[in-house]
Image 1 (cartoon, rainbow, N blue to C red):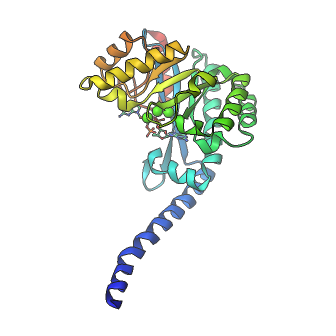
Image 2: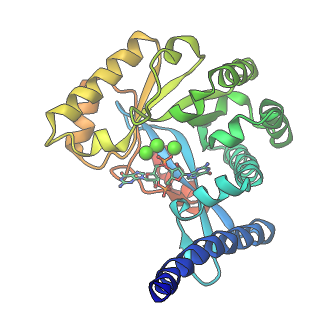
Image 3: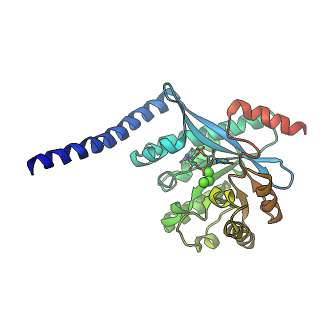
Length: 278
Ligand code: C2E
Ligand code: CA
Ligand code: CA
Ligand code: CA
């Protein structure tokens, strides 16, 4: 029995230890990344579904790691959330995205929105609205050119969320519900909260051609949004068929590889200038 106990200990312990140290390792590394400027933003165009005009750019974080190269957010956002590092990281994202959008406007490009992803932890912090207001002031970006993307799970704390949303509306920034349809929250918040846009999750857009169920969900989300006077953007649009279906159903905006992958800052300028010349 002693033998077996020892063996099972050996089978179990190293894994547990590994998980903990991985998390601490990533946490240390992330701290360093933030301090040394290894975090960077990519931008993915959001376009008008009717005429293809660029209406916005979604800021998507990347970690430019000295050894591992470009690391995707799926590999570090969860740890950042657990450790609370998402708060300073999120502030950095917001400031950088607002600064960048202001810079594009200063370069004479047509004004567009910049969309910033927020984690619940960040959004539900006490002075969140104040932080957004001072970021807008410091960067000189008008609030109408900032859109904040929150998920349904952020709205589970209904009281907190509704207070913050009211303050943000007062401030003049736009709010989109990201990954709409994938959360398990009730729909009742849709009529109560001051929202601007629903963002249809890629999982519904992706298999529309094969799946009548997905087509039904997509067209229903769009008409429900319109009945509630909300706009709709579809994410993950990859094919002409998908675009055609979304256009027929009067989805206002689209985003996905069909138009562009997320681009590093310098390629955005080129992309927008080409668009302007059309
Ligand atoms: P998300 O907000 O749902 O972002 C959409 C993801 O889909 C992005 O992945 C984007 O690159 C990818 N994508 C866009 N178009 C297409 C397409 O046509 N086909 C396919 N297959 N994929 C497409 P990414 O950049 O890896 O970001 C993953 C997630 O990480 C985001 O999902 C978001 O939840 C989170 N994230 C990214 N940046 C931030 C940030 O600054 N703060 C926070 N809190 N989360 C972030
Ligand atoms: Ca998003
Ligand atoms: Ca999304
Ligand atoms: Ca998604």
